[in-house]
Length: 457
Image (cartoon, rainbow, N blue to C red; front, top):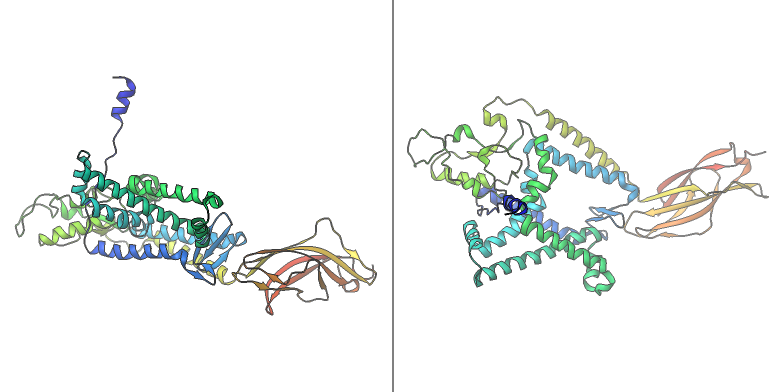
């Protein structure tokens, strides 16, 4: 046998995980929470507030919509603050509750455990039946089950890809891609196909590898957790030494009967009894499995439960978690600043500059003028009538290309002269404020300078 053949033989084979169907009070809670999030994920692109989608992240058009409010590149600082708050929330929950985000709220887990794996149970049976089916030779029954499963997986992946794309381009544009001829939206059609194949590959083949290897958040767990963080853990002081226990019998062994149910239900294939592990996604399946056994044996529950390292080791509980307090303080400041930025955000944004290469002009009627270029952006979802006015002072505005209305989400380019009696000019450079007025209210104020020789010169 050649070297290449030996290398191929020694290459480790993936240990495919067959997770036992979970059941119990924690699983019921996780189902309610997960299906609620799943419903929101599916419905959010179709919800509109004031004509705008509830959520939209159109990177191509540089348009972002959060809760019906439109954010443009000019609002990048607000969007960054929002992302910072989301990141700090995840970090804070990790410090206090471990990897609870992964097991309860991550889309990967929700789709895998509450959709794809449920379909697998429905078609192929529980974990022992799945394992037996995969080890059997190809038969008509096996072929039908496998084809049916993967066809449903592809169909759901196609639906997920459409929903995912609707968050990027919006449901209206997605509907055009679906109803218009393919040749008119070739890029959109290719995107849907690619997303479908990616999601299918993730949920049909990669599965737990996404959580244990690909996702960087799991690896951050070791840095973020400390001995006061609440994680799912096995109480080894109570459970060891392991051994088979008879109901009502007094035995010099721990409460763990070594039934391995906690391992069988784990979607990432770990043994929680080996201590805190990066692969644990805090899904609580092992808690339900162990509690069911303890109940049958008339033993106290929570042999596996939510514990901190201090609790497991029997150490005295410290009065406070410094890092959790620090993260909470940072989060509170970020939320306060984010709220202020949202409520102080103007409906119109603009850029006002003196026209390039131009200078002041002195006229025979005793006035002097400067030429300006103005770009206005309507950040709302409705058309907006507007006028330009000077804020205080005796200057007047004469627009070269007048426009009376700013379209929803559109940009307008204006050129105008700012005119002042020369006798009113006191200094060579005068600070000026231009107000954008809509429906009798100043919606934005822009600052510039007016250049002219002082009066009498």
